[in-house]
Amino acid sequence: MLQVRDLAMRFGTRLVQQGVSFSVEPGRIFAIMGGSGCGKSTLLKHLIGLLVPAAGTVRYDEVDYWQADEATQRQVRAGFGVLFQSAALWSSMSVLDNVLLPMQQQARWTPAEQRERALEVLSWVGLADFADYAPADLSGGMKKRAGLARAVATEPRVLFLDEPSAGLDPISSRRLDDLILAIRERTGAAVLVVSHELPSLFAIADDGIFLDADSKRPVGQGGPRALLEQSTHPTVQAFLNRTALQDATS
Image (cartoon, rainbow, N blue to C red; front, top):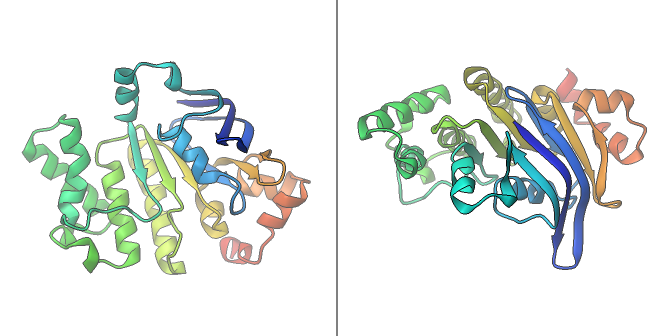
């Protein structure tokens, strides 16, 4: 579904990462891992069309996204669902209206179908009773779940999650992990998750890539547990052997 080949990312003359290559299949959860400042969220922005690569290709099915015309790019993006790190809910809109918004933009459903779908996905994340609430009245974990509901409302083929567990307590984080797994099972979507939270990575990721801030290249590829057991790279081992691993394996 998604193929990235020899991607290079720059901000002006500053190189962020180069030589980034990986593939993601439908129904798989792929983790973008690494320490702070290595370019995880920057990579995600290149994948969803917000930043143009310095080199390399990003292909969705058979479409080379950055070589496609604007109409084709819009069509590809219509298959994306995105949960931003802050949840990015519109404060002036109710939870229900936030979830309705991407469906209204695509105009694939009647208003009645949009409302039915919005309430369905809110029920998936345990927020059906909070549809009329304002985002300011939700806890941090509830905001993330509302953002997740909005991300899956349009039935995306690829779901992008940027630090979904950031700022959450362990119970809320574990609940969100369970929701991500359940939504993957319900939808069959490919899921790309940016995270440095070890318990979440070990709980949900099937595969992944590890970005290194020093060499500015990927230094490991595979699921978190496989990397822990097999990688000899010191940065990968230092990252995956943190004490938080005890929570993930207990």
